[in-house]
Length: 284
Image (cartoon, rainbow, N blue to C red; front, side):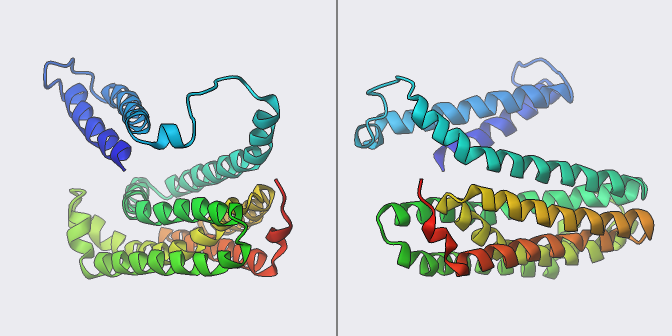
């Protein structure tokens, strides 16, 4: 938490300084954002290392006792993480393809979609936090030999995540015009963006529980299953957006409905796998 907070504050500070040339820093324009991002990442890392060093975390886990490379452990980490690398890679590629197709609908459609991306980035932070917590706590519970308590744990975290998602969905839908006005666009932009806001805000609710189940699988160590679920979902997602946006040339609001398809598919497959109990057979 402290690392993320310091990283965010330093990013804002150096963005303002480097882009506009304030605080004695050179005016670099858009390029200044790159310098600010690198400095912010470094700041976050230093804060996290400081917290580890100044608290009992360092002693409890004996972090600095040995820096010797253990090839067996390194190989295990690589094997477990490689499916996740591919999973995130194809997810980002599909997101870029989506925006390429959106761009074919004109600059206003692209501007509206960029605003929707900000909605996901801003309000999705809370969902991703719950998802990461699920990943960590499922691993912890399994490590304690308490596999039977994993389903109840997932449901508890899912309820918290859903409550947060529903809250933000209601907040956005109650004051959509106010929220869109932050981006400084005209009335025409706001009118065309409103239907898309409704779709995206509801997709946040679906994401709030789907992401929990997907990260629960990650916590069990079955990362190949994560990759398989992502591949199937991305195939459906890309087929949908291509047909809707490129073949039938429908308005972008229908294109953004792909988020419903994406997160519903993620949920059904993740929930089905966890309910099957096959994850209990995984040995790392």
